[in-house]
Length: 248
Image 1 (cartoon, rainbow, N blue to C red):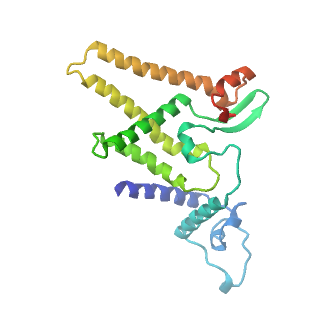
Image 2 (cartoon, rainbow, N blue to C red):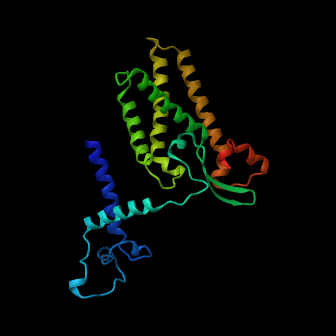
C-alpha cells in the first residue's frame, strides 16, 4: 500500500505541476471543456450570458478532465502503422521503429540486442523459477520486487486495442535490466559463497564472466550506434546490422 500511495502521489504531482506551469492557450484547447479553457491565458472562449456560462474549472477538475480526455483519445486511435508492435513481442525486440532515412543514413529506435535479450532471459528465469517451485521458492525479496515492477508496467498494455510501439515497453524494460543485473550479481555471489574461503581462482573466474559480458555489451552498442544516431552506413554494413527480417 505505501508503494501504491507513492505511485499515485508522483503521478498526480507531475500532472498538477504540468497544469500549473503550462497555463497558456494553444491549438489543443478544443479538446477541453469551456470551463477548462477559461483557465488558460489568451483563451478565445466566446463571452455569453452569465447564466449560460460554465464557471472556470479548478485544478482538481482540470486534472480529472485531462486524464479522461487522454484516455478517450487513446481509445479512439484505431489506425494501423507499419512499425507498430504487440506487447508480447517487446521483450524480444522483434519490431524496432524505423524513423528516418537519407541516402545511406538511417535512424531506428532500437535497443542494444545483448542487453535487451539478456534482460529477457533474466525475466524468463525468475518466472520459471516461481512456476516450478511456487511462491515458496527461495528468492531474495529484491527479486520479487523487480518482477512485480516489471509485470505491473506490462499489464496495462495487455488490454489496449490501439496501435502500440516498442517505446511503450521502456518503463518495464528498466525493471528487466535491473533483474538482469540482479541475476548476474546473485550468480556471482553464489559462486563466491560456495567456498567458505573464496580463493583467487574463484574471484578471477567471476571477474572474467562479468568482464566478458560488459565487453560484449559495449561492442554491441558501438556496432548498432549508426542505426541509433543516423550515421552513414554502406549497404553491406547496414545488412550486417539487420539481424531479423522484421527489423527492416
